[in-house]
Image (cartoon, rainbow, N blue to C red; front, side):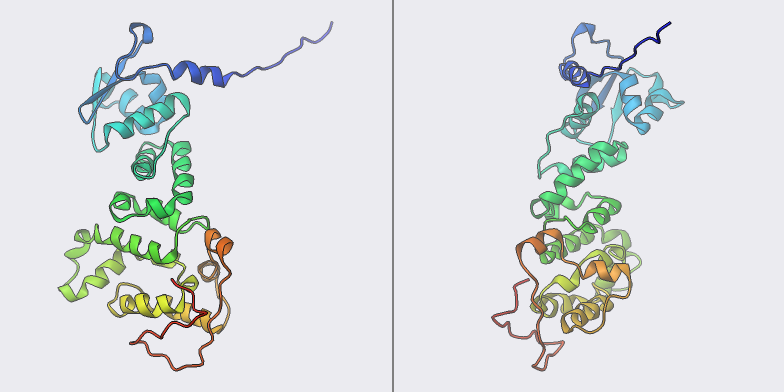
Length: 289
């Protein structure tokens, strides 16, 4: 007797197309919605089983022992309605439309609701468009874990000088959380350094120009915003003194992909006497920060 022939067929595209027809705000009567999410005053009609299958936090909320599991209408806090609509669209269809103006909020929400695939899509988008995403008001809501993930990445497409400004703005937005640990206003820099203690080692100071190191970084070190060892390491790199001592050192000395692709770093030879207090004059071969 011959063995039966078995083949598997998949048509996920057709499933996605069918699910994309669902109208979250005004569903058809036959859509069988069994939960309404009220977000920022907007009501989204959805299916409890699909939300639970997509997101662990939503599964706990909608099917566990919590009060929301028994309610037809559930209020979701701390998220904008247009961001929730993006999350729902992705959970139903796998599609999402991102913009530089909202990707940080979308990525943060995806992290909160444990939508790993959406979070990773947002990360790659933010890396490619970092010079537009890393603006003071836009990245203030970014959790520290996600900020560190992005700043550590080789493919972060932003000048190191602009990244420095962005992380300082991010820290300033959180300064009140450590202000009580700062004894007086002169210790403001120390408070910022405390907030950025896990971020500073990820900034690639050695890839900045000497002009940038003396003109911008050195004053921040003097005011205790940045640990001094990072400036020393960067200057030694330009002087070509010693090699990287650890993988972390080596990574800081490696230009990001965008920098390596656009220009070849030039070493600066220190023939002149330099002062920590006065930035050296820029020569013709000294690249701008």
